[in-house]
Image (cartoon, rainbow, N blue to C red; front, side, top):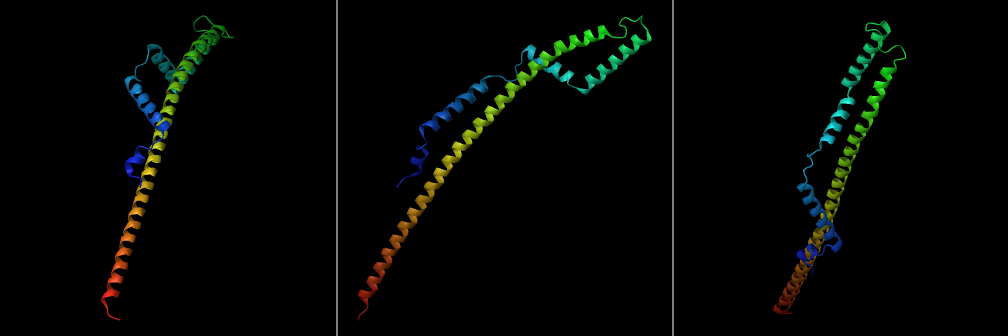
Length: 173
């Protein structure tokens, strides 16, 4: 008959390796400070958060309208006449620098998302292994219970047989 400790130690070698690897990875992740960002990371996050907001869009739109109206009316000696070449240059300059900065922020966020997905996968894998072990334990307990009940039935059957034999030998014919 198999006992509970045998089932606990019967985890396959591969499963033990996986669990050890998960423990090692968790220790390494605890040692690294995820909140430690470089200056470039912080700047790219701030730029992406600022440029990607309605406040920025509204302020920029108002400034563009003021720029165009001031140049069309001629309040300041037409520093950028109608085709607004200087305005196009400024906006192109802004786009040329903003796009890569936003991409840096998105790449860093992608790394964070992949790390979180890997962490979720590791947790699910560990949970699966633990559930499998629990299934083994429950199966073993069920087998032990059935074996115990079978043994009890045998003992009761033997006692019943002995009791019948004793009553047939004691009563005269």
